[in-house]
Amino acid sequence: MRPSPTRRTVLTASAAGAAALAAAGPAEAAAQGHRPPVTAQPPSRELRSLLRELDAARIEAAVRRLVSFGTRHTLSAQDDPDRGIGAARDWLLAELRSCAAASGGRMTAELQSYVQEPASRIPTATKITNVLATLRGSVTPERVYVVSGHYDSRVTDVMNATSDAPGADDDASGVAVVLELARVMAKRRPASTIVFAAVAGEEQGLYGSTYLAQQLKAAGTDVQGMFTNDIVGSSTADDGTKDPYTIRLFAEGVPSSETPEQAAIRRSVGGENDSPSRQLARFVRDVADNDATGMQLRVVYRRDRYLRGGDHIPFLERAYPAARFTEPAEDFAHQHQDVRVDETGKQYGDLPEFCDFDFVERVARVNAAALWTLAQAPGTPRGAKIVTSSLTNSTRLVWTRGTEPDLAGYEIVWRETTAPEWTHVIPAGYVTAYEVDLSKDNVFFGVRAVNRAGNRSPVAFPAPQS
Image (cartoon, rainbow, N blue to C red; front, side, top):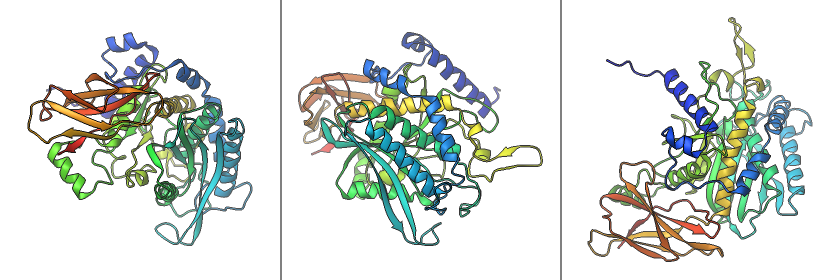
């Protein structure tokens, strides 16, 4: 009997394969069995130029500066200029304002604050402040994409607001990604709007991201994609296994916001693997799993890690497509730990010396490829339906034409119900209806938009139309 593979053998094989792919071109990658999906979009010259500007040294400097504030606990000092979450908040605002200064007026930076009344892990009324930069789109500014990291930190006791809580990996690394994206993109003109967010209160219960999602929903903001970067700083697992060319992306199946009526339709037609967040994750693989990023995307079919959660969840709960980036295998000695050395000489604590800043730069490339392409592509098609008014073994799809001025047309995608990725693409043209000589009973269909530059949108999964 063949022995079962261990976690080490699986991760070692994954790391070796990803490293080989990072060094290979598309032809070599295909020859090694890592074939891109048929929906893959090769990076444009503009995108490659953007990715080359991302800087590991700047990311490292940002992480070390955040660590220098001692603790960034949500309940720590807000008015000390050198220590505590208030000092970190003010530094982040200054950094984002510096990015905005290079944008020609397209980017603005601001604090978004509210007072959280006593609640779980919040013993007294506490001001919680998100630090935001908004880069307004030049063509479709009403369409919005959000990228975040959380700047608060903690030690073993989640209520300890005074001890040093460096929070280098969790989550200065994610905030550094956001800052670097803001710096590089501020000088460019995305078609749609991008919001760069450093949120607070994550360790106490997702308070800052919940407030941000609430405010966007209350304003009727059309958020078509949200990514949180949380624990993206290390490529080394707790057993020393290294996987520096893989990043996990967690994407839920059954939507957190699903109504009973929507659940009934899903059970009737399928679609457990076709939520908006799963389509967003497929899109990220389409545009960011390639030689331009040097990374392999491992999509995990879960909302988050097992029984855990992050800042994308408040967005999911408000029916926004969202997903979480996290390093390939965590080392829990360097998360949520008091800084100490035990009797064996083992160092505990979330310190910057345990981060891999070249890895974080590649994570930033994956984010940049996804966000920039989303912002330049048409929006996800609306009103996608499969017509069911009569019984037939062909499938007729309809959708609503988008309003983008550079819209060139649409494509139908389909796959077997057992396939994780779209396997076939059919050009449909500049139309709002198309019939395929395949039975809706046997395969899954989707619709995506294409603009004149060749950028494709995420796929819309159609609902039945009687």
